[in-house]
Picture 1 (cartoon, rainbow over the protein chains, first blue to last red):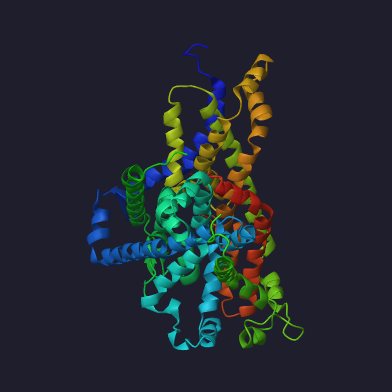
Picture 2: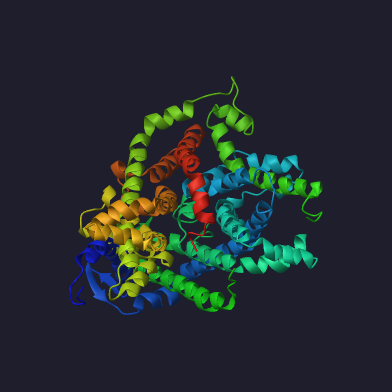
Length: 304
Length: 279
């Protein structure tokens, strides 16, 4: 086949995917980055350079909300890393135990919250934690801890952490599954060799298995990072677009939604919305780069 | 075998931990479901009791049926999910075949280009996507959602499917070529049936996020006649927030279809995740 001849079947095979992907994903992505450099006055779109970003980071009308949302977003991510991964690893470690009965049942049951929509999860927990219904206070009462109860979703100091924990509850199935798969792929010979050396139980877990599943933990971390920094649905379903109380649960996704669409008396501003989207893009890109260059090259890959 | 692995106390502790966490995972779903079948009084008096002859009531479901158009929402969700999955699988498999089967200039580059979208969420481009949909008149149509979900699903689909297509034997394809089959026939008749398990994995991975998405229905198709089940229940619950029977019933009805899908596909889903398809 001559090199100059176009292989039409290759074009036909590639065209639909490339066209849809380019038109709906890549083009709007770059167009959004471009729109962030414009502003609109009297229905005329004008190029303003980095003015939108200066306002976003420095103008008192904007920067307070932006840094609040960014800080909240990091706290949201931090809680995920702190709670979700250890629980996921612990569950996976137990599940991967040889000759454990009903493992498939536990696995399927624990994964159920992950398949539910944010709307269901948000409202279900809102009802359960509601002081009106009283399930949460009654249950605490039953174990003598009623004094600990507070309307967690309604208090500024607890709301964000509570939502992060709800999100952890929902998604713990994913790290569990990925680490479970990684644990199962550790060859039996390695574990037997460790046993011969006297490493069993917990010691074997910390010294042998944990280092071997580090790459999976890295993947989970970056997936969580990307997921958290474009999260929106749970906060919107549970707290509304205003991310109450008093913006205590505002994260970049809800902030961008409010800015883009407007809320109450403020009109929507697609250009500031694009600026926030650009900031989210930069943060996610930075996270992915840190993962690719720093973490993945440091973690040794074990070839079995 | 060492003792630690057979110690009954150890086994008991493991089951204890797993049962405890299973309860934590299922408790909210359980509470919503049982209370959706109770009278308003019973919901508040004994929230953790199962419905009995006294407290049983379907009033919530009646309100939902009367006030919300849940069948329409369900139908919309169904159309959007099935159509998006069809296009993701169809276009994804075609592109994956092109990338894995043919050597052409820019092959690697094209692969990288298509893989970009695995890590970059499509939501970042929402402002421009809305502008595009407004300009093309697709706002408040199901096509807007189908296109967005197709674009969102393609990168991972191409990635996973091309991994699998590399494993299809060359002899088979070359035998087909000698028999005079066209490249299209080879793809549709020989290769597609062989990668069916991988296609099922891709479908299951895409299905749940599409079905559950709130962001794009809210932005691209919020009209009454194009609401998906997720958006529909969100709006319904927002309006009926003080009618606890209706809210609990609406939540239960939103849980039901996903649970049915999960029961049907959980084996496939779990096998997909644990076989390392998302590495």
